[in-house]
Amino acid sequence: RSLPDCCALVVRYAPADLSNEFVYREINKSISSASSFSKINYHRPRSTNDYRFCVADANEYEEILKIGRIAIGHLLLPITAFLPGLKLTYCANCWIIGHTKPECKMNPRCRKCLDNWEFNHRCQKPILCAQCEGPHLSTSIECPVVYNYRITLKDQVKKAINDGLINQPSINQKREANRYVEDERFETKQTNGTKQA
Image (cartoon, rainbow, N blue to C red; front, side, top):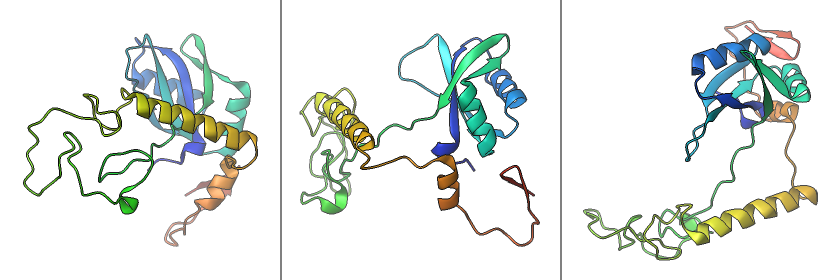
């Protein structure tokens, strides 16, 4: 089980020759409540790696963010909050961006060739984009329409945050919202803002 994105941090620019296990151990030396480690995979090759992990203790989370760096081996690497990517709204019926399947008025189409989809459909035609009719999938970042849509969406979200129309809850607010009913078979005690069994 992983914690929500508001509890996640990223260690940036770890040399690619360091093993994942070594990086995880080094993070745990500095941040005892760190868990759910994963290397972030990028589409382009890089000479360094970034690692995402969750921090269960709110005090530790705030402290390490304030420091802004963590020692990995003999290196002092930057550490930042994890910011998830914006989710693209698209229809799984017609594959056009900007609406979802329940709102769609079209018949279902093949996600590759965009022909009308039938139960025994075997796609034999070339890939076709529903946005620009290019030779790529309809939700691919290769599509100029999708690329511009994502940039516009990102700008609109930034503007809404700056204008105060939306806000990102703090780590403590998220924890309150995600609280679950505890199992009475296990006794828990409160320690420094974290629960321990």
